[in-house]
Image 1 (spheres, rainbow, N blue to C red):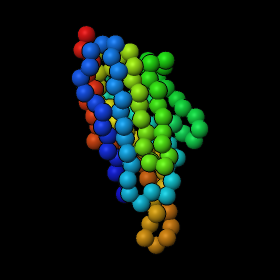
Image 2 (tube, one colour):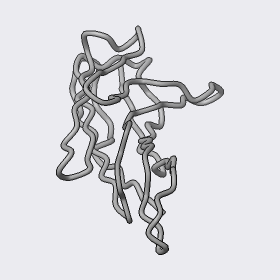
Image 3 (tube, rainbow, N blue to C red):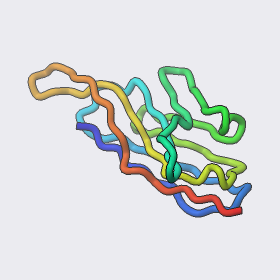
Image 4 (cartoon, rainbow, N blue to C red):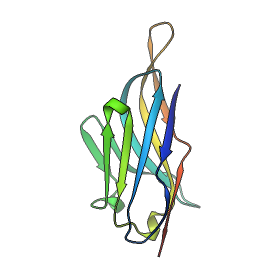
Length: 123
C-alpha cells in the first residue's frame, strides 16, 4: 500500500554526521506519524525519533545530537545525525502511519516500514 525508501546511511568516523532520508509513496490519504527506529546486532528495534503532528520525540540517547524533520509536501522525513558515536551503529528503519485511499473510495489505516539502511560509526 505505502512504500518507504530510505537513503543516506553509510560509514562515518566518530564525531561525524550523516543525514537519513525516507520518502513515502502510494495511495496516501494522510500520514499521521513518521519516524526512525534502529536495531543493533543482538538488540531489539527501538525508537530513535518520530514526529506526530507538530510534535517531535527523541530517545534519550540521541537528544541534542539528532534532529528529525518532515517535508509534508514530499511525504519525506529526515534524520540529521551529528556527533555520531560508535554506539549509534545500527540498521535504521523508517516508519510511517496514516491512511490510504482504497479503490472503493474509502480510506484504510496503514503502518509501513522501510527496508532499513546501515549506519556504521567507527571509533
